[in-house]
Image 1 (tube, rainbow, N blue to C red):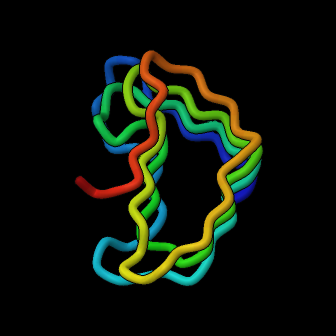
Image 2 (cartoon, rainbow, N blue to C red):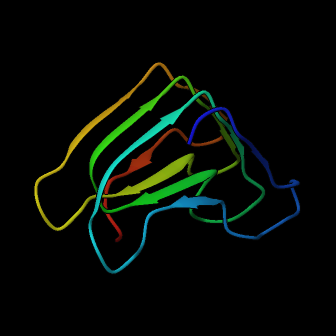
Length: 98
C-alpha cells in the first residue's frame, strides 16, 4: 500500500483503512507514504492484521484516539515501524487484538 490517502470526517464512525484477513496469516506487506485520517472509530486511523513481515514507514496517522492497530500473526513476526508522523489525542500502539 503505497502513497494512498484515506479520510474519515471527525463525526464519522466507519472503520479505518484495513489491511489483512482476520482468519489467516498473510506473507508480507509494505505500507509507505500514506495519509490515514480517522473519524471516531476505536481501531484508529489504520488497522492491519496477521502479516508475517511488515514495513510501515513514512506515513501520517491522524486520530482523536488510538492511532493504529496492529494484530500479529499466529507465528513469529518481523516488522519495521518507523519514520511515521502522528497527530492525535492519545499516543498508544495496540499490538494485539485484545
